Image (cartoon, rainbow, N blue to C red; front, side, top):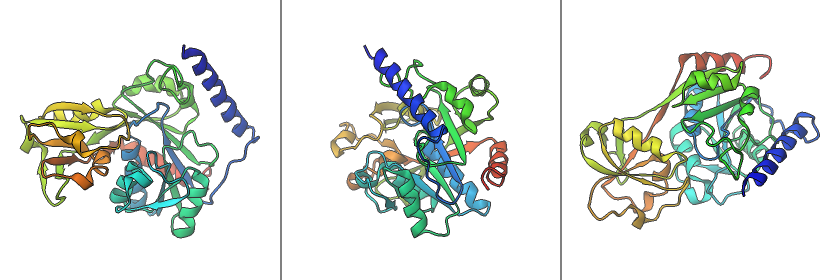
Length: 319
């Protein structure tokens, strides 16, 4: 029943993209290089850890990056700065994590070009912008497009609503680079054609107490112990497998992506530790308990990726 709607969605996506390519629709420029990180599948694929990696890399190489996000799950539509004190209900969960971890200006808004301009007006020192999940936001011109593909691949191959795809897999042949997160790099290279494909993994083995961030424990302290693992991310199983590889005996509790947690949803009646993602933790701060633990993760990429990025940002296209 959803197949005809999927075909109509695909046609609309292709028509819209063609309109921008033919300049029938205008693209806004904001005066600095713009790096877009996105994916083809609805839901998270590891974009936010990659954006954090990019922010750290750019700062270490003399850039002053600013981060722009839609702020999915938040109520803000007009441009708004996100900070470590922001409420996820207003700016979204991912921007709070970005602000806390990156040390960069982070702004959210429904219209990315207006948000980018507002960020630059408040922070004129910013000389490069990184967009978290902006691959399909063609109204803002971009200098580099990076598509992340995770272990889910392309699902059943259908576009929304019959499948998970926001754009067809052939879109990988027009981005500047593809990041393979937990998926076979060689198989993905065939999809990407001549576009470079770089491998990415997520690392993290240090748990932080949500009720007291000063208390930290190595994951090995929980090895062999049963824990409740909650994850409201695009691919919860990725988080559960990560914990299992660290030696924890996981009782999995998957939730929808960007789920707004309530205190009672973290009550399982047995007093066991509850481990969650950093993205979920920002929505659970108000009812944090000593048995609530957070596992931050960081992206690790092929060394060649940094070389590629530096060359492209300082090349004629970015200039």
